[in-house]
Length: 99
Image 1 (tube, rainbow, N blue to C red):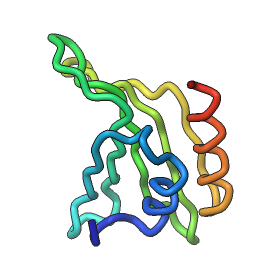
Image 2 (cartoon, rainbow, N blue to C red):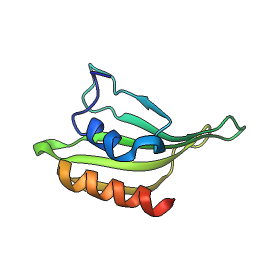
Image 3 (cartoon, one colour):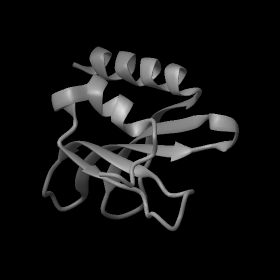
């Protein structure tokens, strides 16, 4: 997992067992997202739900919680942008409040 965005290991350390699978962003595409799968299901219409971690300019990060539908896109149900500290804190609070 050496190709993860620098904030992703911090998120993983805080989220622990909430993350079922991690997919690193494309190494030659810095605008792509790391995917932190919160649930994975094998259903006709959905694959599960996922946190997408993306780099913004100026050392800022964007994390959004998407529903990974097989058809019609991945609707976003929550998002946050900010510094590493802000994003890690907000994501941790969000996930803890979902339990």
